[in-house]
Image 1 (cartoon, rainbow, N blue to C red):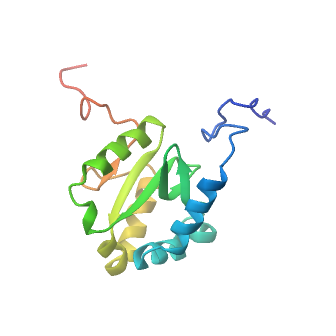
Image 2 (cartoon, rainbow, N blue to C red):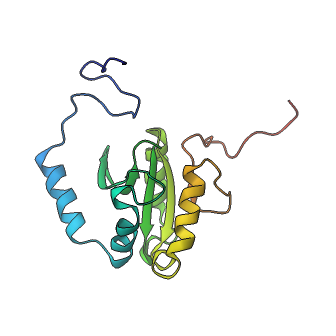
Length: 155
């Protein structure tokens, strides 16, 4: 059995041992959970208790200065449920870059996708968790190069 990392070291799930969640973070997460949207509620009902392919999700998870809507910690995948106010948001792009820098991939869905096509959302999520995301989705892998997708030239 592998040994636990020492205080301050990062384990396999990229969690820091000994890192404490502050009362203000706990309070903010609790408030965010109590004010979730209908789309967030439907998504949570789908993924809670390992309800989607046996993958464990948590909601309103603190990552650095951000609170991710939903996180599958084992897969290092953040799922964000966005309303219309997020359309073209520069802040969301910066947030995604920061989450990617911390090793998390980010998958975004619009509220109406959750409310109108939950089965399709489940299929996309399972494909992403299975390692087969489509480039057409609003998906940003943690391994995405800051200079763009891939490289040009021959190998």
